[in-house]
Amino acid sequence: MDEIDRKIISQLQADGRTTLEELSKITGFTSMGAKKRLENLLKKGVIKVSALINPSVLGLFPAIVMLEMESAEAMQNVLDRFEECPRVIQIFKTMGGYFSCNSDAGNGKCRGNAERSRPLRGMPPSDSDI
Image (cartoon, rainbow, N blue to C red):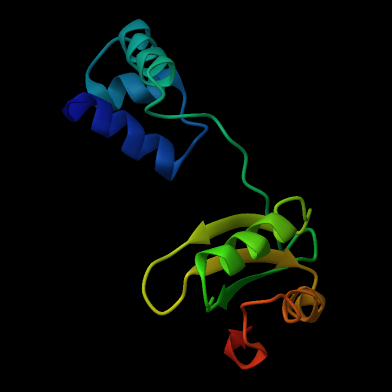
């Protein structure tokens, strides 16, 4: 990856709908040259096309829920339990004081997820913060 790739990526992060013409001006390449660079980044998996939701339009309120786990087994149980939950956008494992963190785009009803997770073995109720 070189400076041209970085410029393309930076511009697309700022505005994912940037046209090839605009990318050509930023890179100094022709539109075809910018297109080839873009296709190469996509082909190599350096970048990917995705859509982000606008939670406020949908009436959702994103929340980060951090859970301190007593063991790797307990953490895996929580991960398995929330894996298919349609309200969970992403689950991350972290190191340090907290071993599991999930991001919930709930509609103000985060309490339901917290209550569902509290009885899981290996997670003390007092260590669950929302």
